[in-house]
Length: 462
Image (cartoon, rainbow, N blue to C red; front, side):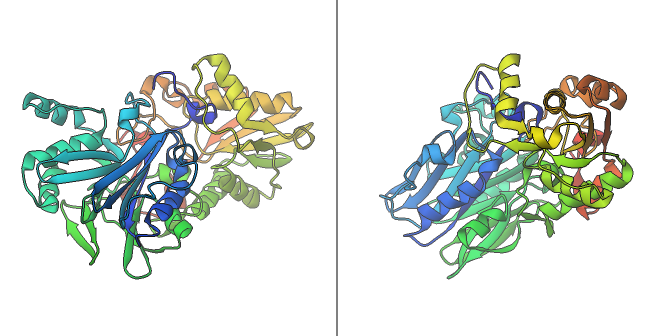
């Protein structure tokens, strides 16, 4: 990712790739509602943001690097465009794609039968093979994104029927992905056959259908959740309504990290509220790995639900031991060890009067490299904590992800190379324990075979 990094804790967090949105909205509200939906999905990507609207003179796009508020400071994405069909995107780059302006989305592409704007979340794992095949046949790529790959494949079909082209092209893609594709007269939502990446369908009044990575976007714009898009399904939205088009045999491999970390607590996945699942993770963690401490605290924000669950199950009070600075935003700095240390201090601060002289049980949602946990433990000790007990509301991460989550190589995963005791010594905690895979699955309330657990057990769904 070059020299662009997040100041906060993300150096020791798996990173979600993107949030996508699209729909058929009332002309006068399309841009504003699309923008509000992107604000709701901002947690899924902070590197770039963009909106595309299909109007009388074609598809117009406004996008750029930074947060939604950076790209759209005056809350007016495309006021001059009169159109009801809209697609939106917030991005976090995957792997070595990097924060490049040309990779910002929606990606607008023109071909023989018109133009399309593509918003994408996830990773096509046979991308290099397909790209090499197309380049051999004369295709010239302008970006490093899978969004452009899909457009080239569609163009090669030379078919004026976009839906028909996609039915032939999509089965060639392997991996975890979701797309929102904007054409001049329709919006198409696509979910991968594994159901690894989330995508859901909602409705506003007057048959205005919308698509989003998470249901929290619907709450923000006043839409009603209808259902999740099925694995291996295309959903085509026109001004006349919505149509379902299966394109592949459906599987079941929803990324379990959606429950653990990625999704907003007020979203629902698989019919389950994310906050309640995380609270159950904490309760089961308390039963599996009891801890004696004066109070429990969570790492803001994704671990607060699990920490409250652990506190409730153990009878320990929950305290705000760490305070989060919410107004840093994203800062571009050289990725040195020293600046990463400063980044953690800038992002989080221990509340000394609560921590001092106490035995602290701190809950975090995951532990990847271990570097951030090391700094958090040190911060608590420097603030006067007598003991620091670390509890992780997920199992040890032992394998990289290939489906769109930026989990590093196996060599970078501390739990892949060290025992729990060795990790505990490294982070200088008084104790360290993880939730079991069985406990994690139980907390979701889903069938084990309906979840992707690859980063925890090394067993990939495809």
